[in-house]
Structure formats: C-alpha cells, structure tokens
Image (cartoon, rainbow, N blue to C red; front, side, top):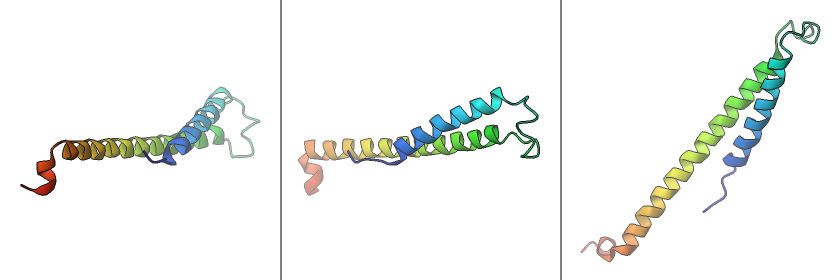
Amino acid sequence: MSFDLRLPIGLLFSFYGVLLAGYGLITKDSKEMYERSLNINMNLVWGLVMLAFGAAMLWLAMGSRRVQKQKNAAAAAAAANPKTLTGV
C-alpha cells in the first residue's frame, strides 16, 4: 500500500478549519474585533474554506483507497484462478 499525501493534508486542514471556524463562531458578536475587516468574520469564513478543502482531500484519499482495494481484490482473484491469466 502506497503513502497517499492527501490523507494527512486533509486531516490537518480539517482540524485547523474546525478550530478556526469554531473560534469565528465564538467571537461572532465582537464588533471591535472584526472592525478592520469591514465587519466580516474572516475567522469563520476561512475556517469554513479550510474545512471544505480538508474534506475534499479526505474524500479524494478515501476514493483512492477504495480503488486500490478493488485493484488488489481483482489481482488476488486473478492469481487464485490461473485460467484467467492464460486466457484458456
């Protein structure tokens, strides 16, 4: 089984996205905190963006694992039945 970099990247971005979005939700009523960003809760916005990116990476990593398992199962089935390898 090969190492898929999308899995740790997805976990990292999801974790920090949840932290940042949570902080944005907790501090959403703080007007003076978001005064510099035109009263846009940038912590919440970028937390959700990071969470979406992390979820996409995790989804791609899980899809890759599913395809790899199917390939391994097909190879094992072909090895168990030598007639499929020779075509006879």
